[in-house]
Length: 356
Image (cartoon, rainbow, N blue to C red):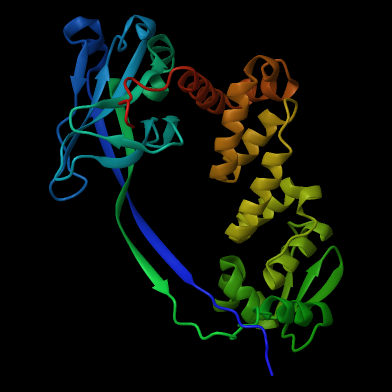
């Protein structure tokens, strides 16, 4: 007797990433701009125990090409290793202390001691001064820098599976989907657009913090096991419930914007990213401004980054659309962010080492 024999190997390499935020405030900014200094640097700071970093600003740009801009940069002074792998972002903090004007670049760079990396066309000085009440509160420029630094990695291997052993796939999603489809063992009722749907409190509470709060606290929904959902259309509700029970959303492409809003409100992060992907694939010149607005409204980071890249690549066409003109009139802070992305896309780095 013979049968098919199979072997498996599983390897796992983990690279941890440490995120570090450094805030630097420069006071009396107009006074400094009057020519006292052309270059200013922050105090040194450490991300790990034995390294030293600082931020710097070229007030009149880093070269002739950027003379009308503020240039910002990050410098690694010293570290125990020969180099550090990291990516970084810069923001200006507004009067409310919120990140309002940011520049970033998606790739990771190799930092070596003494090398400046940054954005030589960070922001036009005239633009900064024109929005001084918003960007320079009390004549102070506050920069926020985020450094994401790769740390040590380790690997795990599993080569001990016996020949001929096959592990069945997990069918939990199928089984939960059957519970939802057939209303088995339900203990609560959801009402949407006048229709009633039987559901399971434990599953809803485990998957979304909104339902968890309803059922944990002494709210009317907890007492009656009856929830009226007024903020979702019927088809959007069905898509959300299908995802909660089965972790799939087959119809999301046709209503991605509405489902994104629901996923954001109900704390369904994986569904939210699925909607972001669908909206990214549907990006066009006509809808780019509105998609950018949606990404900002619902804190959809990946969608926002992709949309900014798209706007930077098609700026002249998008600036003529009605969606862009509406954003200029109603959301100037988003226009400023798009402008910043456009500027950094054309000339992002002061200096990049040849082996970065």
